[in-house]
Image (cartoon, rainbow, N blue to C red; front, side, top):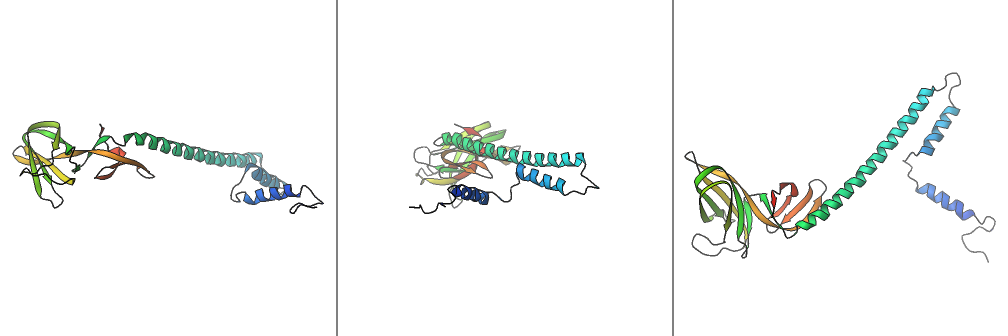
Length: 225
């Protein structure tokens, strides 16, 4: 009894079928070395005998093809390297989850256990540094008198307003200022935030997602605590 799919007259027909299938699956847009040599042989065969190809031209075409092939291989290598670096970056980034980082910002997330903490860059020494906390409506709920300060100065808000009442957890804005040469001067601020997760962006690289605040590029992180 003949098995369906096999030619009795040619028991190796299935090998030819497989070869044909592989040829169909071959990328028609890819020029391999065998294809290139076949084209070169055909070109030599049908060249004008009165005006044959110069050896330099022949070698030049081979060199050009080799150069293009080398560039393609180099691109593949760089692509593999980039994917490897991205995976390694994601692995390293995962160690940040649960850690506290400092990033430049004027908003922070108030929690009942940790309050809201930040850092002020007091560029010029002052004697009356103040930190004002604003709610979502832009109303000042707390003014913290820091007194004399110079350089990087840390602060923590316990979550109570100026009347001693506990404010709800959530996002608040804060601003720092002091008197410099007789005028009120604002200072740059940063916030301490906990990393809840990390992700990878094709354009921005490693992204840290901060609890209650949002996301930021890892390149913005000033310090990891």
